[in-house]
Image (tube, rainbow, N blue to C red; front, side):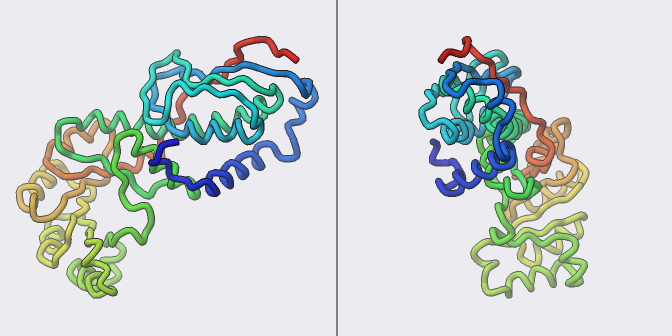
Length: 289
């Protein structure tokens, strides 16, 4: 298992327990009714499209949780890019247990691989620009560690994992406090935290950006700015503060945004809207007792 894998052993155990409790309930009655208890099956997990693998350790542990004696051969580890038609895992074990585990294992593997795959597409779009892709906190509750793990596998850099990871002053904070300068001052006065983790300020206009820089911001989140506005911000502040483009960053726009010279582009879509990839489980042989 990769040292980058985000879940501790107990977290992984609990995650798998919750997944199986949700899916299996009191038991897989269809499988119990149709498959003899001692039958064995061989199976393969196959990619049916080009994709980046993410979640393989979880899929493996789901199969092993239900059948500790299952024989598993991993052919593509997390972070590996595979093309359609490739086998990514082979397994042989108890037929009942394998059939019961199948959906939970595929669900997490398809979902996380979908995030990693879409992230890789965004990363490829900005190659050579010097711009770094960031993820966001737009994740399904309870899945953030895994979603952000998948974006790392795709080549993105993690933004804040939680609200306590850094100060990010947004428009609602500014509206409540009264001004960009006042919000930054309040952040700087907050138990000295700002001096160690920095202050990022969301700016909708270049005037706000100017005020933020003068007040001592460390990073500007340039929200929904035009390409010309981004270029102007880069011209004024590049090297003084870090510049992050956010809002309206899509696969068809990110290259032009990156080429303005911003340091970062943050994209909620890679975790919020990534489609699950197509991975199928195909049986290799007839069941045998």
